[in-house]
Image 1 (cartoon, protein in one colour):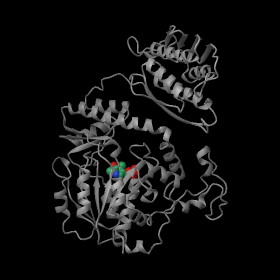
Image 2 (image 1 turned 135 degrees about the horizontal axis):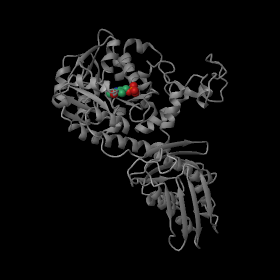
Image 3 (image 1 turned 90 degrees about the horizontal axis):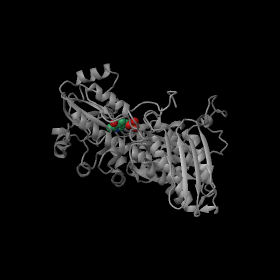
Image 4 (image 1 turned 60 degrees about the vertical axis):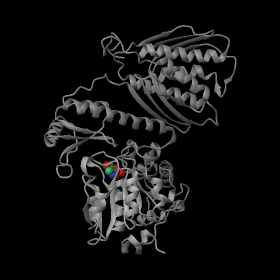
Length: 554
Ligand SMILES: *Cc1c(COP(=O)(O)O)cnc(C)c1O
């Protein structure tokens, strides 16, 4: 019995040897292999940096570690994914695998992403247009009508959420189309799904030979420059598509960058970033809807807005003159402009061209990622928000201590550390303190408009005194002793060390003195008092943006 992929593939593809998509194809790429098979140069390039170290070697055709990480991310098996040079490349592969020039057709639902028609036309396929309905909604009946009488429809591209209009397609409608067209591959482009409220159909695609889902690390993971995407689907369909892969599609540098971005320690920050972009999208949509020239601000499910305006060309020209680039496609989407959600500064620039005020003061947020052989840490702080606070260092007592700092400091912290706790707690404790201090320092930027000083008074039966000066100059003093070696897995001698690390990485003078009976209370009092002192020192004060020093700089 032939598979759907065998029935649909071009004869040229069927004549190619199958691509060995399994991980054992990568055995030849083991770091300790004597590699004399690929005419590589034995010497690394004359370039700097750790990434250059193995650039003289070809990358794995399907990088096993990255494939495993992406398969896990999308909840599918490793033979149900091919990793491609961006999702764009997956579109090209699908067209080349399945579309016979001059004979076969693909369908698109305009206004939509331009690459579907581009790669189909390059391959010599016909492009059948099945436009979206009113309000840019996907209407399954209307779609089926538009493509009826196309016996050679090989690929049907559906984009959900759609670029540029943002609207998601109900997953039930997509499955209905897949059921109705058993001899057509439905290519569901989920490039923006991380920003949407709908469920991915990745799992469903692995069970249906005629459904392929496209994903990308470009948008949600900030890796557009690395070019990493994937096609997910039934193992037969994926294996057929892989025959059209170029020999080494992904540069080693991109593989390394993608693996780093997907490392488990960075998950919480990643989720927080996506949540922030979604919140900014809704906030901007609300503000922009009030601009007189805007007929409708569609927020949809992507990391962008689609603004319907009376004069999109005029608006995009005004934006360009102000140095703000937005997307206006007069033929594909004549009624509006697509605007990506940017950083705070970029969003302010956008709003000002529309004659709107961004409101609120400059946010004081920062992210720090810190990677060593001993620890992998990602931390985000927001000094103007009390929530969320989620700390996971692998040491419950230390989590509790850092949570005291944030809770009493009145700021949000996300901190995730994967450290070598099997060695001991030292590296994790020290490196978390360094990374948190760096993040606080970065969030304070040039330290304008803050109190700068903080002090704290005795707490509980144990007394901890903490004095802080956010002077920019590290200095640390710690007076106090602990009777026990450890509290849980936390070594008590690390407390002095932590405050020294904070002082160094935050650029602050920190004096701590602690007395009392119970080591747990004493330790906790130090962290709480530090949080209280920090709250005063980072508080916004007075008229706003003065540097709290007669020198004018900190
Ligand atoms: C950006 C985008 C892609 C391409 O993503 P890459 O992985 O960067 O190639 C695919 N589909 C849609 C709808 C997009 O907007």
